[in-house]
Picture 1 (cartoon, rainbow, N blue to C red):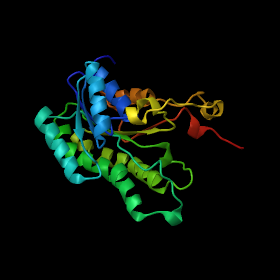
Picture 2: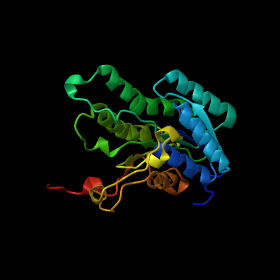
Picture 3: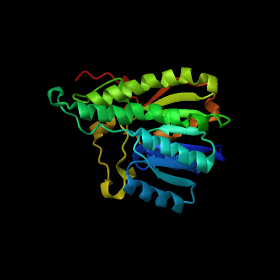
Picture 4: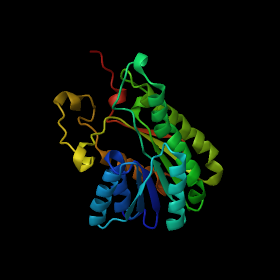
Length: 259
């Protein structure tokens, strides 16, 4: 698929670190102009410098997707600069790292998670619409999670928001079909992002044999695994696919465990 995104404009929310960074780099390497939207200025500036050093076409825009006014301004900027948008990747997410028992759950914390993980993608798609309609083959990709289908204890906001995003995916696919906009989702499992974090938070991953054996493929996932699927789903090669989700978890969610 070398060069298939040449002349394409791709916007990735939460694109400065982790899976988002993996996708940003992958799309840019295939010729796209990539707009990284992120609320972390440190990570954004660092990523911008790194990818520009590789001669990739990228730009960074500061945006908190929980705030509608910032989303609106983001797409106004994109419109002025690029006039169109070919691919929107709703990747921003929060809330997985802070599990709390139900009796200690604060409604404000729950609302914050839903604002970023669920309302954010909806509003980003809303404000991106006029630009997506100017594309020859527009696509929206939502990054959900296997937590939409299974849970560990006390991850209410994260699980609920990712489950909602799965439902929002097929709702948007049907609602935007008349505008020729395809909408799909990727649900990642355990993806190791340690080497893909900003410098101040980066770490060298250490996975035990048991960690690896949880996955039928024999290893923990990497951002590149998600990026490769994103390249396909957002391309015209996937033109007959919409309203679907692709679970990428090394087979972890289909493995029965009796002990």
